[in-house]
Image (cartoon, rainbow, N blue to C red):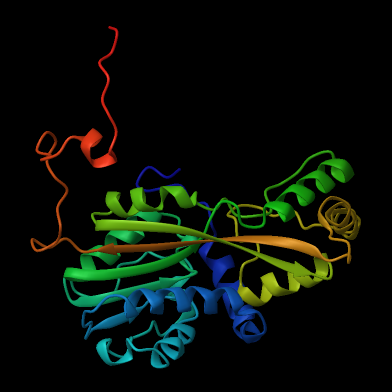
Length: 293
């Protein structure tokens, strides 16, 4: 950990290189991003508000814009501005956002924030860019993502080399999502976990999709490449442990959907402790019994 900041978990230059490679074939594996965009647009359709100034901080932003134009919310949301360079999102939050404080009505960030070395700091920057009562909608990969791949790579490397390196990112726990938003200063925070299982013919097909998404290993520090024998053993373990009767293997993706509002005096506030007008027993329709002490 550096003396002046959070630990460096991911290498931004390595991440930028992965994104540049993925951009050429991303359309072949954009299904998770499309799912995230559809969820964000559904949230906007249920929010009867206008968002004239919108920003899309997604690493591949075109998907959200296209999904929005096909929705009932399109007339209430301004055309989202987008970052000009993929490199600027290689480490979200590492550099100041190019927006003045309180200047944006809506910020969307899909499938990007799980690469932030300082996730609370990135969320705080987004909240500051929002006008009072502005909305943030975000999506990131959660801790259950690629659990099968993590297990077989570790076991295969231990078996073949006598030691193992981290190969899959340490994704955030989705159940901490609302707490992260609250820590960053958002009001009315909401987090929802969506688990998706995708089935592949084998490990090479899964790795091909991960490369097309830009979701392969970018952990900081020296990386010892996986040799052919380790990969063959990992593929064998994957099939032995997880394959269905048709031989296809599952890959779990945990998508964490986040929503939070920039604080405003008009927003609903929780009641102060001790100010409730009804007893909990009355609300639940149960009869209270005195304790025996």
